[in-house]
Length: 70
Image (cartoon, rainbow, N blue to C red; front, top):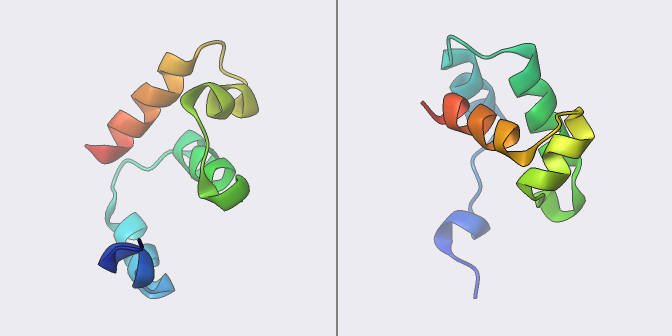
């Protein structure tokens, strides 16, 4: 069953404003987000993401998302 969040995603301008507010957004973060967005149904595992970026282990992708979240 769809949730309120999945049936009412933020507007494009809200995403833009949110990412512009992140002071330490790196090129690697942007690449990671683009790969995640381009994944089928925007779903990707840490292992798949790490392989797509060229990291040797999935923990790096987990760390990158953790830093982005902070």
